[in-house]
Length: 70
Image (cartoon, rainbow, N blue to C red; front, side, top):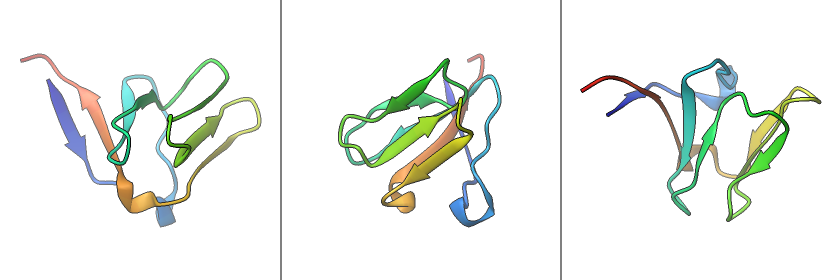
């Protein structure tokens, strides 16, 4: 089960184990702490953990959630 959290990209991109980003444009789900570089298939959102960068072309098209037990 997903529990959606408040996300304001202007205040930063939360990154910790158990948090995920969902792109509402393409539906891809990315972990907030991947092992390397990842991006959603529509290229709206990308994370480069080694360089310490996260970013979105359209931040309003992202949702942040954590998995919780049902």
